[in-house]
Length: 221
Image (cartoon, rainbow, N blue to C red; front, side, top):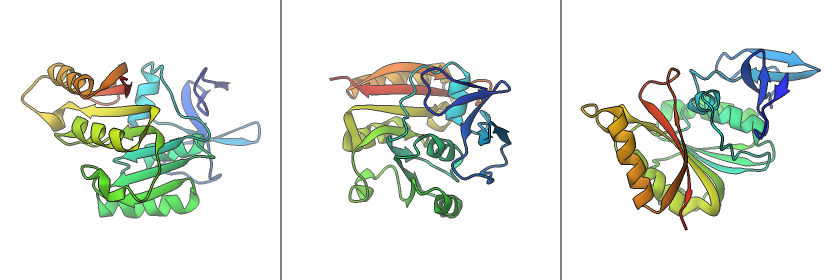
């Protein structure tokens, strides 16, 4: 087993990435559990997690630390947030999810992971949860809808610390199925730059996710 260089809390085990299980003995989404030197690790499946896919495809900017404050938009049932929870053991992950069905799973997961805070709300209306959280180090967005870059930027302006990092998973088919993914990715990057952000890194998520691109951003000023 080896630790991935510059990647806090992420390990390479048998050619798989993994995180140390915060909740020993329990799986979140059917992932494999492996014990190494009396510690338990969860295999991070890149086909079930876009952040896992980005790491596997050479992501270089990994801002997550043990004490990070994170706003996660589009948390779903908590697959990727659970791995972030393993990493940010002394931090907080505010998990915004719009679907009541997914929220039930997220609430159940958060009972065992005290650093996760589930919020049933709409990421397109970020002022709804303004009273529930503080400024964050990282804003992570995985919301599959046509205005995904716009809601990402609006949440960034409200919640991200000046030196913070934003990560957006862009799903081209949710924006426009008639346009080529490459064209859509260029247009979304232009929106981010025009909106006052600089793009540090772009990672194509193939073959794990079709027509998806991860972008890592910071405030341009």
